[in-house]
Image (cartoon, rainbow, N blue to C red; front, side, top):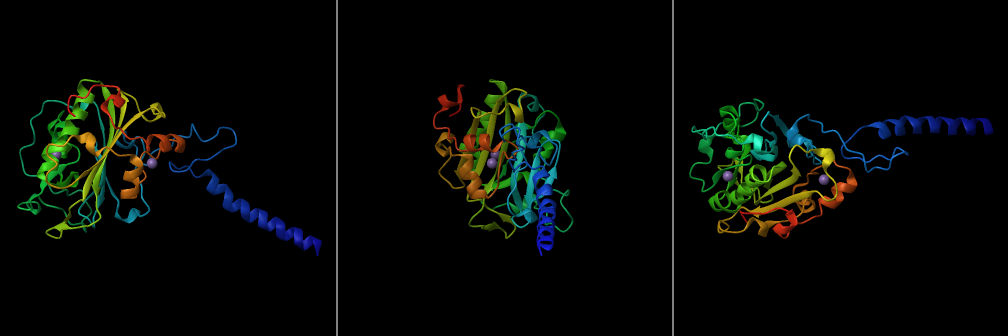
Length: 298
Ligand code: MN
Ligand code: MN
């Protein structure tokens, strides 16, 4: 009787070990593991895509079936075949990316790198829609080579934006990024995309975002993941995709990464230790003075 009971306990313990050991050893950006020696805080993850553009982590949500990764040397895109637009676009930015090649002069380009069964959005799909073809990676941010610049004209890098958003307050933040890179020698890690709740589509093909978000981690030149600490600067904005915002100050739309994570369902900056994520994702820039550098564009 006793023997069979201890046998059962032994079997239970073996089964428990089979379950626990793999869970405890799976490396992941999203999990903090206490290995008993160091407590979580130096636990930086490794992005599942090896690229400078997602060095702080590949954003992930609970449903990977509508996340198709487009990997280019100029940026990384998570494309959503159901929406006809990106879930998010991630890119690194510093003065090196800015050059002097002329803006690509052709039409916007259908992205034929997508799987054959995906609809490929065309230039003409936007025509007469009332919406601009709004770049996520800005054309001017990829001006070192013609190929770099042309890559920003793939329609997978484009989201419908009102002219007032695209040419107004969104552009002002793009100017500010340029200023940070060129005048203040900063290294930026940028993620941008749309927030889609109403899901209205242009011609039934291209979903119009209710608002557009941008997250910018601002580091000193040549810094990366492991230079980020609780004092690092993060700009987060959500701008409404409406008319009438042309002359607004971008700071008006300052928010937190936490709120963007809540609205989009994505976990951003997920290779940072949880404790650092918790702090910097809750920060909100309310004054340019908080950025510790001048802002000529606000
Ligand atoms: Mn634009
Ligand atoms: Mn996060």
